[in-house]
Length: 455
Image (cartoon, rainbow, N blue to C red; front, side):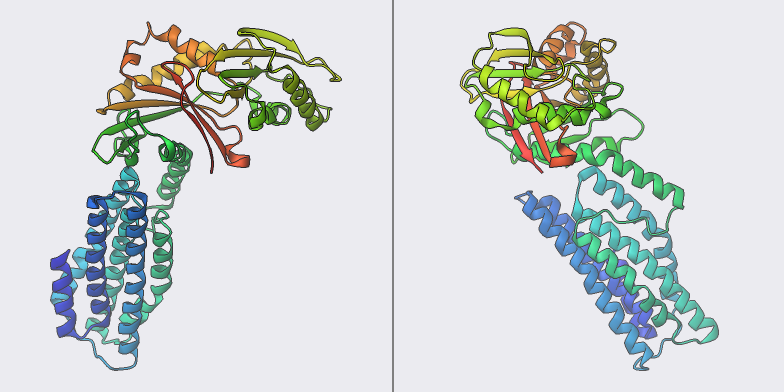
């Protein structure tokens, strides 16, 4: 890259070519951008602040490039410089036109694997560099063949909106677009893949923002194995702490039951307020309220049902014994029976949880067994000091005790569970609507650490 910058700038000086000078300037800016990315990876802090600063700096270099191209092009149009033919410059531009798109693609793939906004910005600059090389090549060729002096500065000016747009997106840390180097269907497919994994990685980032290991170490997302390794099973994320310890994180969505979407709203209206009201907690106790799926029929005021459920629970919460018990909620225009499960969690302020009983034709242990069979082998195969599996419950269809008992039953079938450090349940039913996500450690040792994040 440094050779490219020196040769192109030298050729531009002798040929007095603004387009070639713009390309050489781009190469110099890209070299500075690469230094920014290198600093990002070797920054001692390796924290979010360093990442954001690196991304802003790399994006800002694109604005510098835009100003550079504008100045050189205007000078050419005003007649202050007269471009001459440059065989060396044409050779450099041909090579850059071929190499830069490939280099940008490699950087985009690496940025996805490392979750680096700075590297995404650098990939954008490589893409722009390829475009500038093509435009400059056309300008030099037209000038050499037909002596049309204004061809390359006009073409360079036409590229300015694209450069400015990429600078803005790179500064915000957004993924750079494909910009035409691949066919439209492939670009659409890559964007679709990004959409598919966005929620998963967002969830991992949320988890890492609060998680600390028993020694008090925090972790930062460092690798995306599932993006790098497309042809073999790979986990979603590897995080590092300040001491270089590796934390492997894998996520799986507990598949919802048929018709789950239609039951979400009445369930949330009827029971979610129990979980959100901290005053209902009983110290040292976990209380789960579990109605059957589709327990609240249509045609009723769901908010009124929720208030009645809340009033019943407030008065009954201190009377629940250990273990399982069924209760009929009074003062409703229809019969509503719920399962209440309780267990001791000593030394805590208490937890109130709500979930749903899966339909009888979809027993939870079979759902859990399928999830473990898919996720555990690749999680334990990942080199790491700590391994965590996140079980996402997007439908509130599982209870903590169900998970704990289900895992214990599955241990004989999955001996590799002994190599898993912890399993957490992630409640995301209100993530899209209220930005509310709950993380709770459930295995081994039962309900332990837990935290709520509003994103």
